[in-house]
Image (cartoon, chains in turn cyan, orange):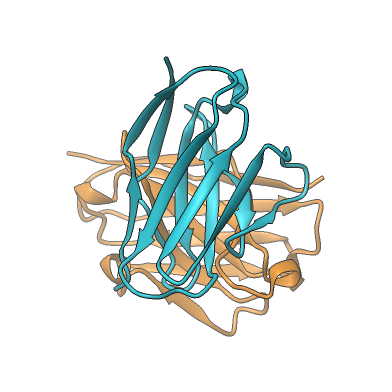
Length: 105
Length: 123
């Protein structure tokens, strides 16, 4: 099975900061990588699919890149509503990373 | 707008059974693959099962193979998950999630999710 590992597991940042979350696959998954945001008590929401394509309706401060085994999600200027948990997911093996909790500093 | 509404969760004893339902609206249900994804309390996300738009193919995570069955009724726009031989480790919120193959060309891109239904397996 292909494993997905995110780093860091948690992150503290301030409104306006630029943050980057990493996701590494245990073997190459080409561009079969998606990113989700989940707020407490809510269902996840798709942010990015195919490694770098922004889902319709998602603010442009979210971007992502990568291919093969290494991927990143970047939020260019954190807004209060962005504090949440972020998951990467390989759509080749249907496995999720363990999540990155983004907290207010 | 797309809506997915799960139901059927509850408390069940180990070894028991439960059937979850997911009522879909706002899109052409019969043209889209569907998934179940679960989240144990305080834990991360785990994909559980997928069914193709016409029910012709079904796939499961290893831990539920032989115990869970995914199915759909395209006339009723409803997705199901029959869960048998339940274990404590099946305790989770179960989400139904629409597959975005039509747009992305990839399976297992979950573009819409329901609000989830909690399944608790406990004696």
